[in-house]
Length: 214
Image (spheres, rainbow, N blue to C red):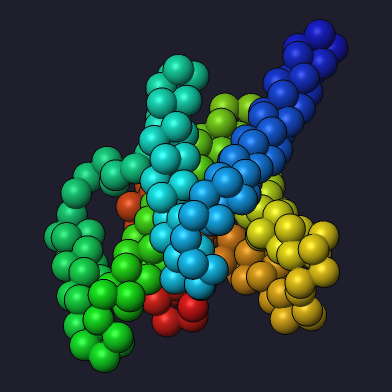
């Protein structure tokens, strides 16, 4: 019995450590890529978004491949594709298309919506509510513990977003709102994940929240 408890504890620690390593590695790769690529383009916010979007797409592909090597499902789609998922997806798509900014700002607005409301949610949801969530579910029987750990990790993830600015001195107190956002988003999206048991619902919710808040 004691050996089993020790084994379970080691497994939990291994999964927690893996989550931190993935978070640090993915953030590090994204920052390094931006540092290497950005000098070739004008220093604009739009260009930074596009570089970040490109890296998120690459990292999403890496995550999917990594999950396959670990034989870990990502729970992307609902086990049962109901009408409400189809309706929610259609409504969300229409919402993104008819955004007033698309008709005022044109291409830059469209790409910003793709970046903030599609690519970012897919990337972060597959990582946290997909891979990390399912890995934790293998070593933790309590859904509450999985939920709380996911919130904590997602909040720390948003801390990583502001560390480069903190190091360079290019930050202010408002940057700390990213931590609040991480906590709030993590809680809401975690509750949706608990209820639906898939990432498609959290991707839609994440995309809509980003659409109205960013």
